[in-house]
Image 1 (spheres, rainbow, N blue to C red):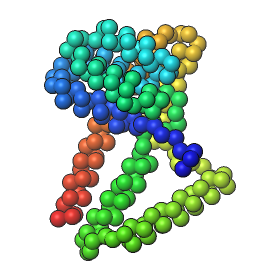
Image 2 (image 1 turned 180 degrees about the vertical axis):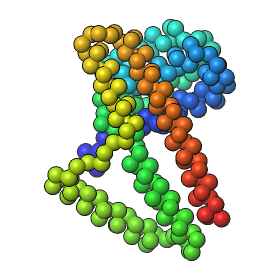
Image 3 (image 1 turned 90 degrees about the vertical axis):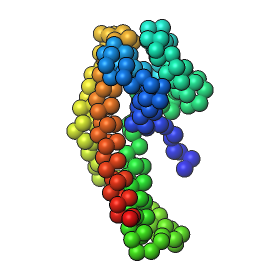
Length: 217
């Protein structure tokens, strides 16, 4: 797929930050200190900033965040800012899709395939190839329908609200009605919404995992 674009998933990006907060033993401070929580959400929301403003906002957060979060900032610096993952991959400012939900759907399909076959017999390479071939045919049909003018799947209500708020903040920023710092604060409110969606998605995934395990047994 030479034209494929590689990008991170906002859900997993937020999940990674929260897991690091937990691993560093900072969950209690995050939950009970509103100022610290707001600063951490600004760190997460830097992924929604215009890409040319990300580094400046990170440096600002380095200067104002509590010293308790020094290790978190060091992790963010090495993992996301300068070393491991390029900013271009986890910046969700100017993208059409901020999550990999479509990929997750395919993973769920494969999980159900394996689970259902385990009830009767073990899946083999031939049954797996048959599944991939069926998926390829299904994709080709969708591609033909889209080329013929079919409408794309509708966004969820929550996604539409998120995008509407994002567009409003972006428009105000472009009109110079707010500066970069104010934009990041506004985007951090969207990060709060994304966190709640993450929690709901994580809970749903845990329930599905338990369901698959029970069926496997």
